[in-house]
Length: 136
Image (cartoon, rainbow, N blue to C red; front, side, top):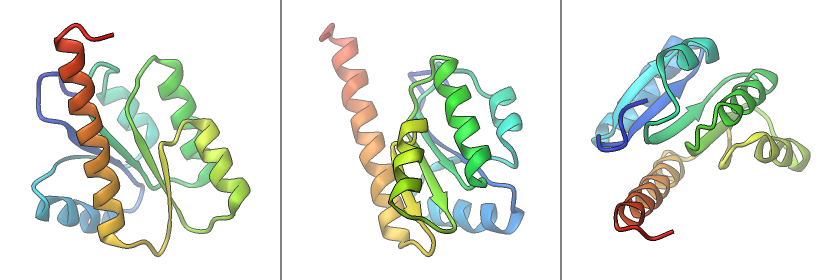
């Protein structure tokens, strides 16, 4: 991931090129910087645990959970939104336990997804500011 001083990015992990293109276009309309990955492994290889941003995961549930667990085990503290084809309460709880910060079921509202990302970026910036000022 990018350094903590750089503008946060959206890290988009989705195996489907068409879906990545569609989401990238959505995020670009809101002036977000996007880095795309077709797999969990390509994301983990390219990114370190020091950066800031928001992870958007469109992988099948077991792969998404494994990515979240590996990310948390590495010490990374990046908010993650898991996009699911189908959902129920146990699936959402399982995703949150694996480390997802939000769980969005398809079909989802574009405004909901962008609102969640915006919320994470505002929180990240506030935490960085507090840290830079020595607030514990």
